[in-house]
Image (cartoon, rainbow, N blue to C red; front, top):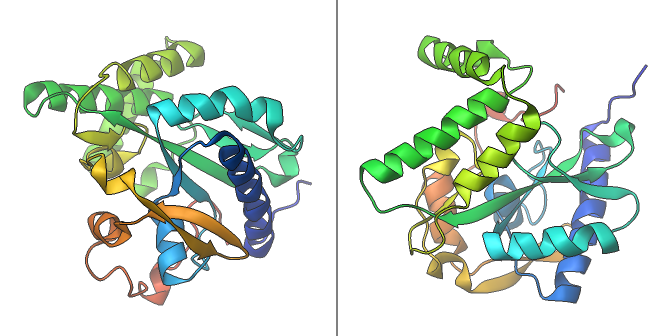
Length: 247
């Protein structure tokens, strides 16, 4: 029987991944920063949000391409960069027993000009996400989203995963310039947030458990967009649950 990792074990594994990624990035001058729940954890807890179960990093498309080139050659042999069955590249342990712990790499890409082209671009990516989803827990969604998810899942059945993944990367990276950016591989509303280069241009070092990691200097602005102005207040106890782990 496959052993389930505890949150404490997941945090230990994630720290090892983060330490390894940080070392490769620093060696090659690759710019990254903590993002989403990991950024919130650094600011509010000086480490993991106690119930969080993954690490989120953000890179521009150019920086991600550099990391994708060097990381497989220089990473700790325990780890690999993989797309598996998701549109988000992940760094994780090669040992299946530790597969519950992974680092998501979110990518900043330019958006088309505001208007119908932008809406169509985001809709295209959302449709591809639905086509690529596997083992979806439909009970987590309302009726409208359940119907949409089932429909896009059926749309994706005739196509191979390789085709869908290649199309996703091609669509998400086809806009090469522009000051309006988004996390092109973020799920749901994460993809719709509009960012600007100056929000991530300056980075500062911040404690994260026993490491020092890069966060945006304008972290307050970033976290307010992601979590609202009261982001320093933890949610009620019933909402303090892991996203990817049944605990």
